[in-house]
Length: 242
Image 1: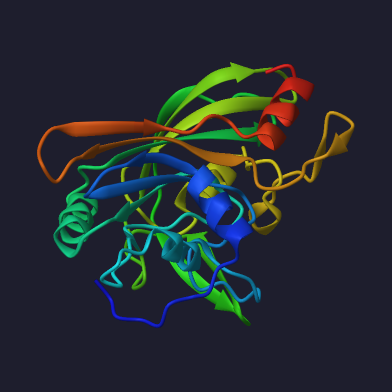
Image 2: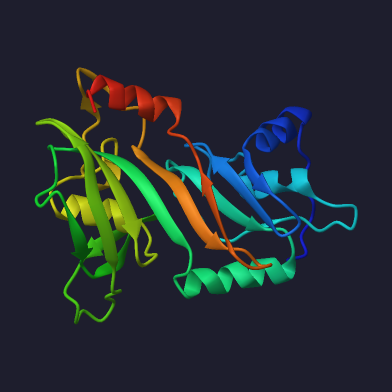
């Protein structure tokens, strides 16, 4: 585990992050990250989820460490390792693609065509000022990163669709760029062309939620952790009759 100076948290912050626990044992901590909270290293001068993990510090000064990240405006399940061996085990599981992630997204334009399938489009990173973007590119581009996403439509109408997504690779903004590339950008995704209003009202944020993680446990077997659709996304879904 990394050595770092402890972050002082208020009683309210400690209570808040503890209220987000979905699963906890001596090896693994799974949390339901709310939208608007950076996983790590955000430029906004506020505590990140990584900072809030000090709420789980033990008497020896050790604390959980995040295994992966979610975009700031993406909600849902995120994993942390409670010990150095567990962190290493889960990190190798991600590298070996043994952690299965399932997301839910609300997209504009109705159902994708076809309604389900695979998206295999190489991506490259492009930095514009202080912002980083991912762009679809040719597979032989010098900066190309092979990227693969699976999707299926769960509900749709002429205006929007509820889509289930499974990233087979873990590129930055992968699901967002892949959906935009097939003409179905995620609602509220300012960066990649998602509509900011729908159903006669504003879309409050990026409509992307990490709903389920199926992962191998350091002590054997597999665990499945799920996070319910948050209220803001459920409200937009209901407004769209999906």
